[in-house]
Image 1: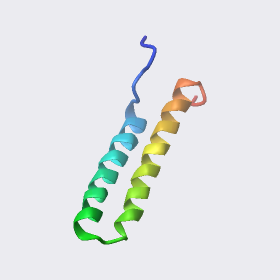
Image 2: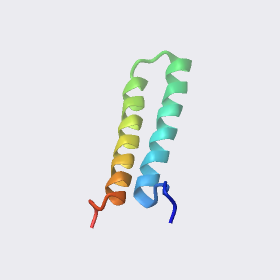
Image 3: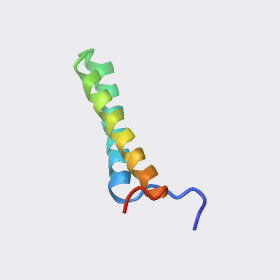
Length: 64
């Protein structure tokens, strides 16, 4: 068992999907100068946060 296990299943999906969403929206806001993309960036960050919280709960026994 490793000291720093990586996220699995839903947690991994949320972290990766949030990262891709935020990066894609960052490029879009840079290219189009449309301010609405900033909400998509925030949503990507929120997805990452939820994924890491789920991962942390699994590590610390909160998920049964």
